Length: 397
Ligand SMILES: *Cc1c(COP(=O)(O)O)cnc(C)c1O
Image (cartoon, rainbow, N blue to C red):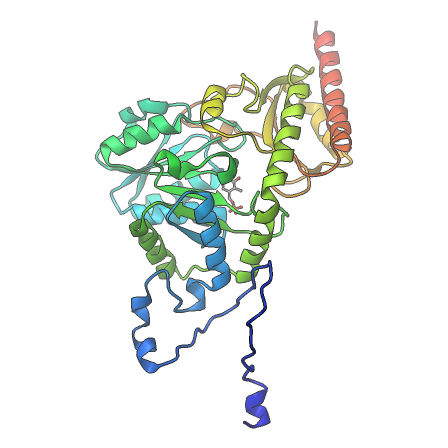
C-alpha cells in the first residue's frame, strides 16, 4: 500500500479486551458492505438495519434502545427536535381530508403547524379543552384520525385525563399521541396507558444541559415504527450522533436531577402560593392545579417546571424585579442545569377555553443551583412585585 492510500485507509485494530462504560460516537454517511450481493440486498435490512448514516449508527440506535426500554415500548425514532417529533407523528398519521384534535394549551408551534402547514394541504384540526376527558367523544367525527395530548400543558399546566381520552379513542379506532416532555418516562409512561405515540423533547430533561436539540417518538408496534421511519426517510431527516452521545450522557444523571428538582419545585410552589400579588400557583402538588387529582393518580412525581399566575396589579413591577435576579436566568426552553424564569401571556393562544386571568404568568424552571440562592431570587421577585402591588391596591381604596 502506498502512502496516498495509507493516509486515507484507517488500519483495522484489535478491539478485543476493550470494554468501556461509555457509548462510542459513531459518525457516518457511507456504510460499507463486504460483498456486492450484500450491497444489492441492503433494502432487506429493513428499518432496524444499517444502510446509510442518515438512518442510524450504533450511537443513535443505543439512544433509541435505551429510550425504548424506559418507555416500555417496542421501538423509538430519534428526530432533530421535539417540534420535529410532533410534526413527524402528524405527517405520518394524517392524510388530506383527515382531522387531528389538539389541546388548547399545546406547545404553541403545534397549533402553528396545524394552521400554517397542515391546513393548506387539506388536513383539518380542532382545538379542545385540555380538561375535556371522556367528553372528547363529542368532538370526534368521521374525519378524526388522531388525538394529540400534552400533559401537563405548556405554561398553564393542566393534567389531562389520558386514560379517559385513550378509552374513547380506542373505542372509535382513532390513534393517540402524547407530548410527555414535562414528565419524562421516569414520571409517566404514555405507552403503558395505551397511547400510540409517546413523544419527548430530549432537548429538555434528557439532554439536561441546554446544549442539544433532539426529540424522540416511542411506539409499541413495529408497524408504527416502520411508518415513522418511512416519513423520516422521505423527508431526509436524521440526527447527529454527536448530539445523541450528549443525550446518552445526560440520560445517566436524569434520575437524580429529576428527583432533586421535583422536590425543590414543590417546596418553592408551596412557599409562593398565597404570597401578595400571586393569584394561583400551577404546580401539580397543589390542589389548585387543574388536574391535581389526575396527576396524583397517574404520575410518579413532579419535575421542575411550574407556573405562577400574577395579579394584574403586579404588571408594572415585573420587568425590574426579573432583571434584578442574580441566580435565575431569563430565557425560553428548560430542563438544563440553570434555573430559568420567563414571563408569559397565553390569552391570545386560547380558542376553545378562554383564559380569563389578565395577569402575567411566570413560568419557572428549577435547575441545579444552590436552593438558598434560588430562593433568595424568588423571595426578592415576589417581594418586589407583591408588596408594590399591595401598595397600589391600598392606594386605590
Ligand atoms: C420544548 C418543548 C417542545 C419542543 O422541543 P424542541 O426540541 O425545542 O423543538 C415540545 N413540547 C414541549 C412541551 C416543550 O416544552
